Every structure is written in C-alpha cells, then in structure tokens.
Amino acid sequence: MEELRQYVPWVYFAAAVTFILGLKGLSGPTTAQLGNRVAATGMLLAVIATFLESQVASAWLLIVPAIAVGTVIGVIGARRVPMTAMPQMVAIFNGAGGGAAALVATLEYLNAGATGAVPAGEVISSVLGLMIGAVSFSGSAIAFGKLQGIINARAFRYAGQQIVTGGLFLGMILGGLALLGDATGIVDVRNELVLAIVAALALVFGVALVMPIGGADMPVVISLLNAYTGLAVAMAGFSIGNQMLIIAGTLVGASGTLLTRLMSKAMNRSLGNVLFGAFGAAGTAAAGAKADDGRTFREIGAEDAAILLGYAQNVIIVPGYGLAVAQAQHGVRELADLLEERGVEVKYAIHPVAGRMPGHMNVLLAEANVPYEKLYDMDQINDEFPRADVALVIGANDVTNPAARKDTSSPIYGMPILNVDQAKNIIVIKRSMKPGFAGIDNELYLDPKTGMLFGDAKEAVGRVVTELKKAA
Amino acid sequence: MTELLLGAYIFMLTIWVGNEVISKVPTTLHTPLMSGANAIHGIIVVGAMFVATAVPGPLGTVLGFLGVVLGTVNVVGGFVVTDRMLQMFRARPARAKTPEKK
Image (cartoon, rainbow over all chains, first blue to last red; front, side, top):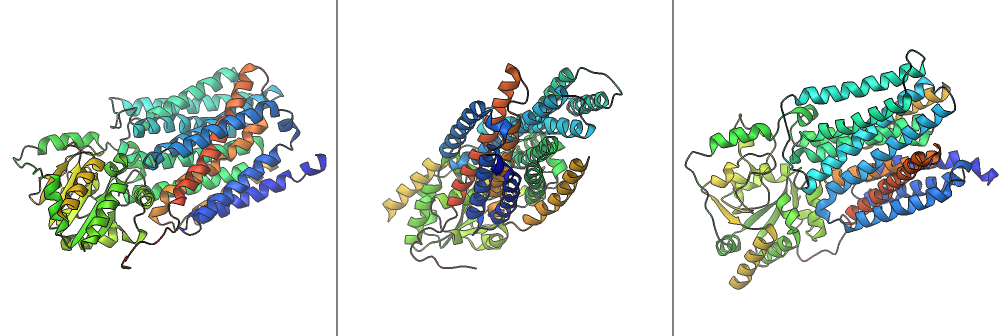
C-alpha cells in the first residue's frame, strides 16, 4: 500500500493526458468513440488510484456506497433516455458535476477553516468553486425543466429583472469578499453563515440566469453551464491542490466556452444576446401585428401529400425538433425508402441547430439508419431548393422561416435558414399552427405553394406511407 | 504559494490546450463533444472522495456522501450517454444503391 501510494500522482498525470487525448479524439468523427473510451479509462484508473490514499481508504464505508448509488443513477439515466431527450440528460449530468464541485469547495473550505486560518488563495478558489458550481447546478436544473416541459419553455421576464439578477450577483460577490476579508483579518464574520448565504444566493442566481432564456437557446445555455462546471472543478482543484482536477476542469472550461461561441454563431447570435436579449418576448408583439393580412394557410390530407411526393423527382426532407419529439425518424426513413423505390431522389437538409443541439438531428437520423451521405449541411443544400419538386418539412419551424432573410424587424432576422420557400412545392407536417420556440409566426405556412398536413409527425408520416403503399 | 503558482501556470496553459484541441470540430459532433467534455469534468468525483469525511458531524457526512454521488453520476452518466451517441456514428451495413454525392 505504502509503496504503491507514491505512484498515485503519476496515475493522475496519466489520467490528465487521457483527458486531453480523449477530447482531441472526440473532435473527429472516426476517433470520437475511441477518444471517449480513452478518457473514461483514464477516469477509472484515477478513481481506483485514489483509494490508495489513506484518508480515502479509511472512508470507504461512505465512499463505496456513494459510488454505487451514483453509478446506478448514471447508468440507468444514460441508458433509458431516448435519443431525443439527450440535451436535457446532458444538462442533468452537468448539474450533478456542478453540485459536486460546489460541495467539494465547501467541504474543503470548512475543513481548512477548522484547522486554522485559511490562506487567501484557497478562500478565493473555494468561494469561486462554490459559486460557479452552485450556479451551474441550479441553472442546469432549470434548463432540464424547460427542455423536459416541466417548466414553461418560454422566456420568463419581469420588470426589474436586470436589477434582481444584478443584485444577486452583487450579493454573491460581497459575501465572497467578506470571507476573504475575514481570512486576511480585515473583518470578522461568521464564516459558516456567510458561506451558506453565498451558496443560497448562487443557487437563486442560477435560476434567475436561465429563466429569462427561451427554450430555443437552451443548448447554448447548457454548453455554457458545462463550461461553468469545468471552471468550478478547476477551482476545486486549486482548493485541494490537485493538478489533475485543474487540468480537466480548465480543459472543459476553455473548450466549452469555445463550443458555446460556435453554437451561438450557428444561430447568428452573440453570446451576450442569448443571455440578455429578449428572444421570444419581443417576437410575440411582432407576430400579433402581422397575422391580420388576410392570407390563410392551405390544409392538405395525407393522400395529397403522398401523390405530390410519389410523382416528384427530387424531394428534400427538412427534419426538425417535432420529428425528434415524435420519434418519427424511423417512419421518415420508411417513407424515404418507398420514394426511392419509385425512383425519387431523396435528400435530407440538416440545419446546424436542427433538433435541440448542433449535430442532434444527425444522431437521430443515424439511429434510424439513414445513410450518412444523404444528410446535407445547410450550405451544401441551400442552392438545391429551387430545383426540388417537394420540400417536406417535418416538425421544423423557425429554421425555415423566410422572415429571417427578408424581414429586418423580425427577431430572428439574420439567422441562417434553409431556403425551403424556394422549392416548387412545400409540405409542412406540423401539429398545429402554433409558433415555434422563437415564438413568432412563420410566413412560409401562408405561402400558396405550401400545404399543411396537420398531425403528430410520426402519425402523419405513417399516414403518408400508407397512402404511398396503396398507390404503388 | 508555490502550489498556487504552479496551479496558475497549469490553468493558463490548459486554456490554450482546450482551445486548440477543439478548434476544428464538424457541427455534427458538437453534441457528442459537449457530452464528452461534460463527462470529463466528472473527475470532480476524485476531489469529492478526498473531502468526503473532511468535515465531521452529520451534516458534513451527508454533504460528503452527496458530493461523491453527484460526481459519480456526472462521470458514469456522461461517458455512457456519450458512448451511446457515438455508437450511432459507427459504420452500419450499407444499403442498396446509394449514389455517392460530393
């Protein structure tokens, strides 16, 4: 035991290397799975090695059951979740990490305080770890609630919101400064009480931060909170003096921030705009003003849709979140197969933020065995819409709204969209005329070329498939 | 102070590494990458193991236990869910006549 223990830091070093290699691997399609497994192996080794430390070994009666409980929750959660619910699952796991980081920072701070004066550096890292971790914890919980539909996904805004959020933030910082002042002997406060207040403020701040953000922006928020947790972990690493934690946390903090910026860019919005801009809220006003120009939509049946599709030469399928929610990806593939048997060329147009996260739709369609080479990025396919006989929009809304191209007053103006409106015919499968996550009307639906086929994506696609089979 | 300074050096260098490593990621992989990165910060579980019994008393023990549980959920759930996602990107049996385009 004693001889082995000296190698623990080297195991940590090796684990840190696997994290970097793993992340590198994850950024390429062929190496991604290997990368993930390499990092997981490093993690496992690090956990096992940690048991060699005497303070951990002596606490095994507490730690082993805790790991067992966590493993059961993690495995069941990760295995049971349908692919469509992936984003909120990531949010939950991220929140768990944030909560753990906050607890580690708190416990280490209290531990250090019990044995004497806490050095200023450790006060700073512990308080930051607690704050950031707690914000990530409660923020992730709200993000989960919004995506899962437990909490209204619309942006929740109220008068004086900026003041409340700012006040919470200020209170958090003041509490942290009080603890720092106490450690350096400038002021004298009751540490535990102030720490509890800071933790409570941070938890409320996380809620206040995410509540005003609409569901459409949730992926960006989750990515940001992911980076926050990374940072909290790095801070906890500073507190307990563990370099592996600093590396892993900072790695995620830095790459997560970059990923967040990439995601916002895919939606043509700045990060500041996502966090503080009134997306959705401003949209409702614009939508109300526009609905009265006398144009109406045209409803079609599954039969019409089947005929239109069956006699087309080129069909572009535009899948959106509605497809994901309804689990319609398998039905869509069946539809595509039937069409291809009839000699129709079928392609899929994937908007960068189709689904709930970049790449989410690709995962779902891959699950249904849609060949990878039929999935086209927005830039690849946008020029092909004018030549397409039918664009079949399934549960997609905002990413097809021509207002983003034309209407400067629209809140989504400037967002890159799929040029569905340029196709010769458009079929939109949708549950109702309700606006999408951005909360604005889509004038594509009022286009005379557009036929609306109402229904749940899976059920509606099923009806079209039945009609097509009849026709064959 | 030296340990803090060492940590600061590592922190600074790792920011660069983190940015470099993912600078060229296809959009398709954004979701698995986010999920994988999410699993990596689950390493906090090691920290939680160290401080699990650091604070005596029932509250300290409960918080310590909770820390390890949450950290483990992050690690295990994160890696399993990422693996499941990436399973989808695996080569699957090629189906009839798919004209290669672009």
